[in-house]
Length: 118
Length: 115
Image (cartoon, rainbow over all chains, first blue to last red; front, side):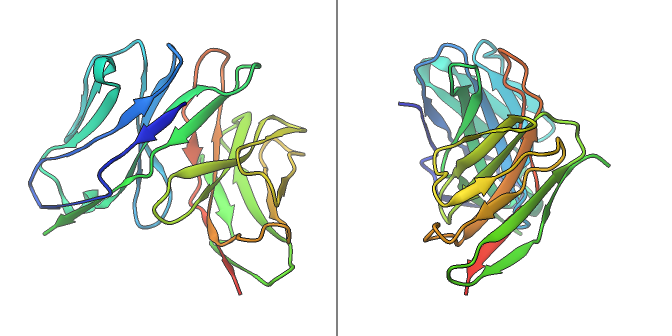
């Protein structure tokens, strides 16, 4: 069955530390997409990255980087030199075909709450 | 600026009452979605609509209803049949292309509380 596991419920780090958020997924499909979203205290989900299953190249965007490894079904997210503004809940999501008409569906992990202490 | 708006930010429901949550987008997206978020859990899909005048049940549609009369609007009604409606409700939209999963963009959410 399709599933996304974020085993880390809550992580606390001190500002300027690096932190990695883990995401492990299960899927039957060969074509799928993976996403990371940030949910600050305001509640809105903010899109961070999308990755398709055929692109295993790691990506870096400023202090953010993502490591996608199909061999271990993982899509981990690292924040370098964390800042207080990074404090939020981070969700990993898997998207795959939901219906015979080709509709896609997101499956969300339970999220990891990151607290960055000053 | 393009985006998704949800109103109200907080909504209180009395026992046996139907309430409607508003979701409007000006991104010109065809698809819209409603999710429910409970504390410590991920988001679960309630309803989705791929195009105007068409919508489909998601994983937890019981006790909810929707309409899609306009491309920009996808209101969600929480009916009295929903026995545990207290949650955070998020609306999203995307422009799906066949064979490609486009990104879903989310609104700011509505927090529903039962009095």
